[in-house]
Image 1 (spheres, rainbow, N blue to C red):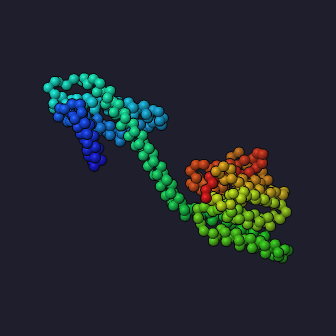
Image 2: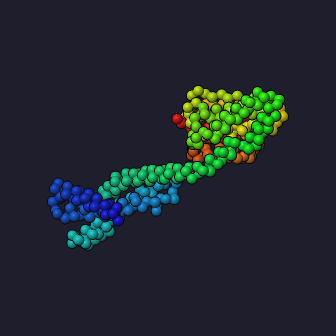
Image 3: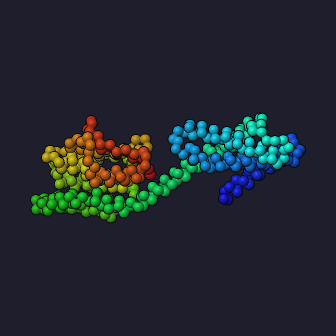
Length: 340
């Protein structure tokens, strides 16, 4: 109600201003002030009703051109109806002549031009405001999703970061090396301790630097290399420009773990893991190669890979990609927007 009262007062003020200007410069009849005020209220009121209720007419349209055509048509209707209403009231209140439909002459053209000049900027402004509010609501909803899923993510991260099967194998390897190669057993214990420090004591922030993530996977791969001895080689190449950039926390380790599982563990032959991180334009490109069997046409989404995909989708609504590629060599390619 306050909004409509405000609009009514604005229309009255505009009509009074134009009427007084006409009275002092062109037509010195007092009723001219009233007529202009009445015209402003009639046409301005209809215009505001149209603009602020436009969703009833264009809500289901996706084509911007179609929306503009409908709005222009409705603005013409507003100008014609508002003019006829003004002429009707003027005839009833001041004129001695009977009212006749569409008997206003050039006033229809003038009022249509005025409605276009005022209505089109109003429409554009309100559409922009509506889209801005919609984006703000989407951002708020996305933040709410992040908060609601924080606990779930922490549980998923713990399961993905510390695979019980992996820990069981490492402990068995340590037990076997204690008598045959105590030096390697000690090295494996130190690496396992370092890995625990990263995965359990590292703060659970949403983003880590590339350097931190690389140190996590480097520790993990060193442990696996000791386990598999001569069967496994790995290489990590990181562009220096990416070290301080931020990526989602604990997002590389599940991908590397999948590469070890399918590229080394599933084969009795020698294999290698190659990780490359570089900056291309404004995107961080991460590739993880392994020498295992090619990805199937419809790869199954394991828990680790699914967790990575879900987190990326939530943190990056657009501008990301994750691909499983077999040619010219088997690798996972992850592209993320670079951020400091």
